[in-house]
Amino acid sequence: MYIEQAFKVLHDWWRYILGVLLAFVGIGIFSMPHAMAIAMKQMAGEIDAEKMQDVNYLMGLFEPNL
Image (cartoon, rainbow, N blue to C red):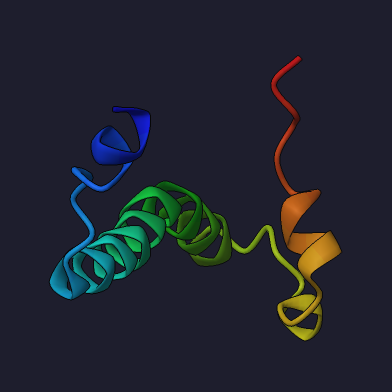
């Protein structure tokens, strides 16, 4: 009985591809606010252009949510 229930899951190949695509789309959508905030600070001249490749510098531009 338990083994029969284990084989009733949805494991079609296209579901895995859809899941990976949705994960990448989600990463892109939820990283947009940070990218827009960095762009706004760059337009205001608050960012050192030489340090734009440094991830630690970019993450330190904003105060953490405590």
